[in-house]
Length: 318
Ligand code: MG
Image (cartoon, rainbow, N blue to C red; front, side):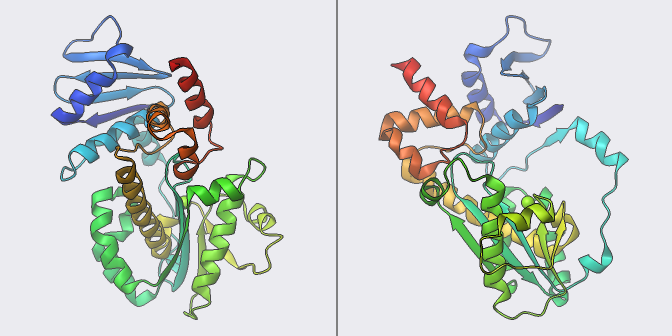
């Protein structure tokens, strides 16, 4: 996998500082440095082009994309993935018009891959009449919207789209969910709750759609102890591309997540990284040193591997 990201001067400086100890002895022509981060090779060019290569290149690229976004909130991010491009050309996504042009309740979640911050699950209701307005707002290509754009359009979306969101705080997550319960079960329970909350409002719908994260029989098996199970769900992979209710649910979840994430970072006085990479570990160490290790139980998902890595790093630093 090769990902190319265009970074501004301020991000460039941060990268130079960050990769100082990871630099290779040799520098390719026109490059400022070439460095190794676990399996990823990072090359930063004078032009501001940063190239990430390796099987987990996306994780490293994502971190720096977020840094770029954070330092330059008004800039459009230029990023390209050479492998994805090839795949996309091969396989066109099938969008079923019957499902796209329908009254639907859609559900999607955010935050399950991020060490810091809550999990947010949203169910949203979109009626056929509202589809054109939402298309105009740019909901159809929800994947292409950056965080800044999401902050702009979601307040418009929620003026016309009824929704129900559930925020699972880190405290609740760590208290209720020990290691024996997996992330997909948590998702299933939260989706079921959000769907029921919205369904009870009585909107007329043709479909209930969940962005598929588990096979239907597995999904329902997670709910076997629940007393109110929302059935007749249509599970769709890449659901947000195939139905606007799912797309709205995804955007609203992201919007709420971003707000919560910012609040969390502000309360800690740091710029919190998203995802679960080593940059996250380093921030975890910083926070543990400042507020004590226990603080992590309020702001992070403790069953992630990052917790152990943070512990190790703290011991090394002693
Ligand atoms: Mg999803």
